[in-house]
Image (tube, rainbow, N blue to C red):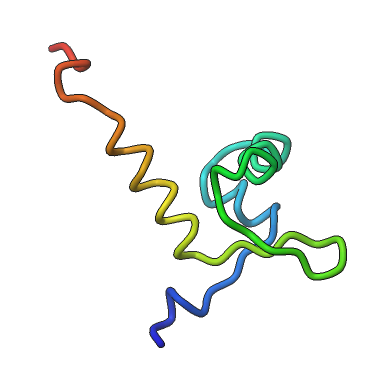
Length: 68
């Protein structure tokens, strides 16, 4: 297993990684946009789940939406 598969983030780290607020990070988890699990009351987010979210969001971008 590589390091990316083993890396686990909490909500604060997720927010920092994506450069968003903690409330926005909680919304992503609440709406199942990013896969996570809980240990007690604490969300745990694997790095692969964050990368999967980023990939899916990037795929939504159409090159024709950009203008010069």
